Length: 457
Image 1 (tube, helix red, strand yellow):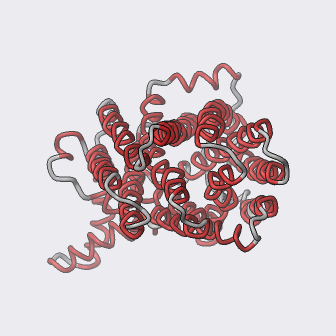
Image 2: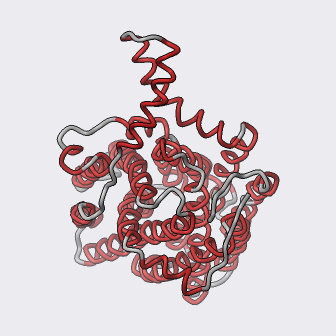
């Protein structure tokens, strides 16, 4: 049963002034920034080096790593990083290690020409994706652990701040990438993208400095609960090397999944997983091809930076916070249904833009409303899955749900470029199809809405 106690608007908004929200904002930024690298920056880099839309679209398969990070999430929950864990904590140690891998990858990208070494470019992009997906496991866990288990409203506010942070890392990182690339291109540098990647590396360093101000709570309670589950398994298997190994593997890999299905029931658990997989597929199809679409209808990198990134960031911040208030006051399920309808509706604006002459006004309108929809949908989605996790397996269960959502967005949306080519470049029809893709997920959510176990007190 969902219980929601109404508050005044000022009381609700005051939740955002909790000092924990600033830390969650930074964590969101750390999570969102790598998507600039393997999303818009890589796509435009490959496109400007003469590669086809289909090739750019399939290159996005590297995002599928995010769909499978739950497979090693249990290891992130348990394994300690030598030296780093003792010095800065379990969660922060994992984040810093992954950030260093991303930084090294940017340096390597700065030395590569994609037309001559496409396979190596994609391989390095895959390495960034793996590090980023691994980082997300512990970033999300650290974010959830900043909030008490029974603070449902603070969890919704934290979800909003995490989304603001994610889009800040993504949008502002994109602004820096696009303006830097265009600046060095105008100065006559042929390797303007390679130089840009070195500049983006500076942001990695700054984010790691900021991370040191995010507190990490004592993990003894989590380890105790994990140990209790291990004990239950070991009592049935005996006490020797092989049984202890099986106990560790069973507790690490099986415990989180068993806990999730036991809490929700088998049919509802499958329904949740199906909904999460399908909900943002249409948005992903649009997002994967959007920057290619902007270029093809005549907008420059600076135009894209101003309208899609800078203006989009401002819009996203405002409506993510407002979306968080809506989730807090009206409930996460209402927010999910409304988000799905808004996402489908705003995708149709891109059809209007595609079938019109180049118009900065239409471009601005389409981008603004798309960012409103994305902000609202993301904060509702993050709050929804955050309320479903067991604190004994925070990283693993959140990673499981988030990665299944990513699976829909990455594996299916990787065919987005091929779909545009199959439609002979009919962008308007492409965007109509993306609008229809949200319908199956809303049908699934409607069918199980009265059986979900959520606490929104």
